[in-house]
Image 1: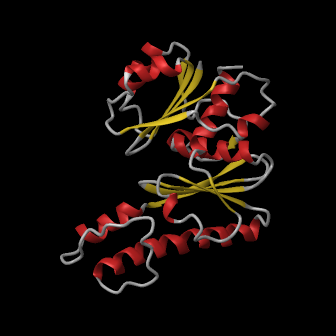
Image 2: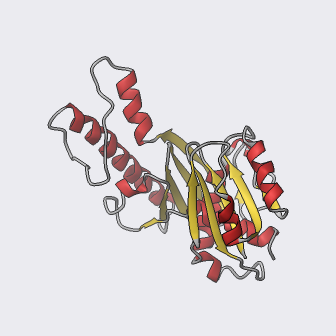
Length: 258
């Protein structure tokens, strides 16, 4: 049997099956290093994994997190029909970290889960969490376990799309992780370099800025587009593709599966 962690993002839904852990709330050493047994992806709001996936992994409990503001409640209810011990993660869920957002209910569930993932991996450390997805989010967690807030910026595709749709001559550029020019030699590479180098310097700027206040700051990089920037940033960067899943899994262990 397993634990199922579901992370519904703006574009993709992740279905992560973890080993069915059950332990005291204060023991997170093993949990911090736990990786999913499998991660599946669906791309349509109403889509669920194939039925044989549930039969294969036999999820005992599940947690559902979504950034779609309850427009996908039908999916949550469909999951509950399959897994009775299932709950939805939102701003009202009790957490071991404090949320200093002025309007907690407006903070994206994925951002809060990522902060808890960083706290699980590095308890007692201040962290900058950079989530590179459809949007890029920068979130700050203090060494005292306080979520201090964060910023939202357009991601790679949104920047490319904005250049294309708001000009008459610029094409919609295509990129790959191995295509990271420093300067453009034509229109296509100028767009690629402008967007990718701009984000690179943006991330480094955030790190430098916050290290002045938090000298021991750790930086966690996550999200689907982190592959473009791994190895290109300042030292001390921890690439954790499953950071949101780690935070959600901790909540599931702490409040459902103890």
